[in-house]
Amino acid sequence: MPKVALYAGSFDPITNGHTDLIKRSLGFVDTLVVAVAVNLQKQSLFTVEEREALIRASLDDDPRVVVRSFQGLLVEFALSLDVPVLIRGLRAVSDYEYEYQMALMNRHLAPAMETVFMVPSLDTTYISSSMVREVARFGGDIRSLVHPVVAEALQRKFAEG
Image 1 (cartoon, helix red, strand yellow):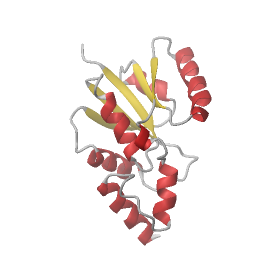
Image 2 (cartoon, rainbow, N blue to C red):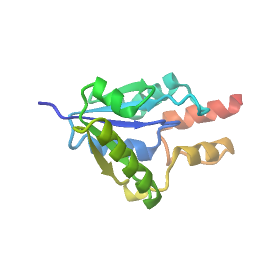
Image 3 (cartoon, rainbow, N blue to C red):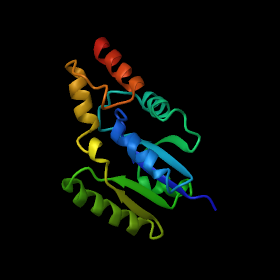
Image 4 (cartoon, rainbow, N blue to C red):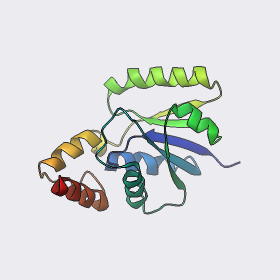
């Protein structure tokens, strides 16, 4: 039986921290669904389609990674795909309380659903999408923080702006 897990986020944009976690997850799952959250209350820099394309490009179209978007409850999306495991990244201690509460709520909604917490690699701990956007907006060097395709996309977005 293949092992499948789901890793969700806004990925606006995907960073080297995200790709590191995704690649390490593939060490213990056969397939990873990377789920792009559509949050109607949030103003995203990239469209859902652009974020999906950037994720695929950042992972060199790895066939073990399935990129999908979703709206609504993450646990319901995972159940609709018959995915029994959610992977969540914890960059800092401050992430833990929120993620712990989410895991408990997901367990309440779907008792068989498991949540696996992963910590980032030391060299990606400080990277966040919001920081990458901010540095890129002001012309800072983001080449070590994101895949080259993402760096180019950010540069184009802010040149248009």
